[in-house]
Image 1 (cartoon, rainbow, N blue to C red):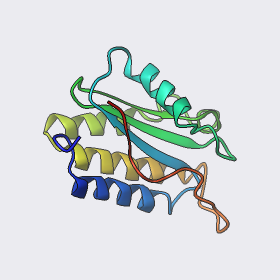
Image 2 (cartoon, helix red, strand yellow):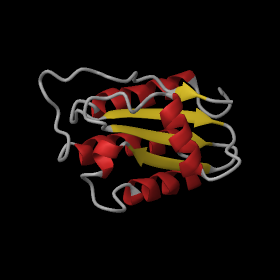
Image 3 (cartoon, rainbow, N blue to C red):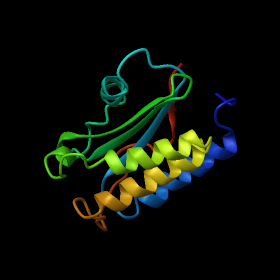
Image 4 (spheres, rainbow, N blue to C red):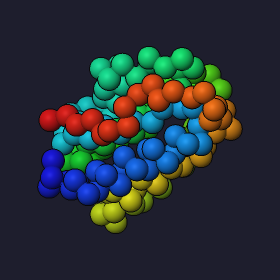
Length: 143
């Protein structure tokens, strides 16, 4: 994994997750793996379920999925989010992430997507003083 993203860069992404979650009760996770053989959204749904991201009180988890060798990525939200946000809610964030990726700025693209997701979610799921971190902030990795 170090070829794609260094320990220092991983720390920046985790920091962006922590920062973004200060704005929202939503839970944001990043999953990185080398290859995705099929549709990245379908793979993201599989990873979302594998990570048990549906285990949040408001069903407000967000997964940013990246398969770097396949050059595929997706952003998906749980049912609680999808019931409240407009169609195409993630498209602009995904487009900007793609722009960063096309310039080779992978860490920056992921961090910006995480921050934008937190900022966008706060209108629907504002941070609450009794908020509990229901999902780990660490990046999960596949093969």
